Length: 324
Image 1 (tube, rainbow, N blue to C red):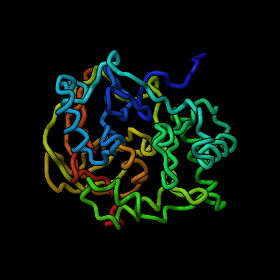
Image 2 (image 1 turned 180 degrees about the vertical axis):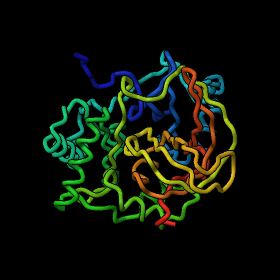
Image 3 (image 1 turned 60 degrees about the vertical axis):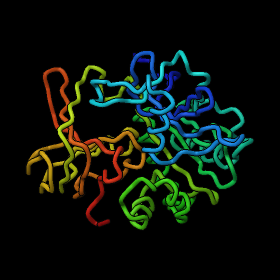
């Protein structure tokens, strides 16, 4: 019998602090002895300044820590990867100290979902501003769930709570105005998309987000893979596999119906992959979607396949055609 335990080493949902910078850990696949992370808060005028744009965050990392911006074959690019040995503090979202005091609504929602789903509460936590204690009355409730099966059960509970009216769909575009600055999609399109999602909504007058993160033992990428950039691409396709669509990182299998540009052909099956939670729950099996992103060739154990990576460019997108 395999014993599955919550993560203790930093992966998606954790934060790390080095000197005067707090960084969000990105992804599940982490190089040995390192942590891939991007600046989220930097010390500014005696307080912490929030960084929201991806480019601004990466530029700050490269300027401040150029020696740790290194090439990795498994990603086919340079990554901001800090040695764990220089990390001053790790923020674990499964450590629930003071959550109820800081945000009783967050703890109440977490407790409801644990009871409704039957998921072991040690896999369900709170991340974001509540974890970092930068929380304000307007802050989101950022839920985190570790494990694919745990996440599916929590997702079904969220759907049931939405059906019963205990949760609502997104109503206020205030947070989206800030968090979608680095996207070419119109704000009204993002609002329509987010209102359709179960992983985003409202509870007790507050916006909540739920991020479902695979455990390292069940994650599909490998440090042994080689990733090679081909160029950019765009196409219209049909989603034929959405099993990882509600996760962060997320992945879709898409059958190419019509090429827009780049090195893809009609009839090909292409993986569409992102490390960013905004691309979770963007489409379901059978949906026709528009995809634009970085085209890669991935090689692993004698197999190779094409993959579109989303998230590093403002033009990157996977979106159902009925939103366009």
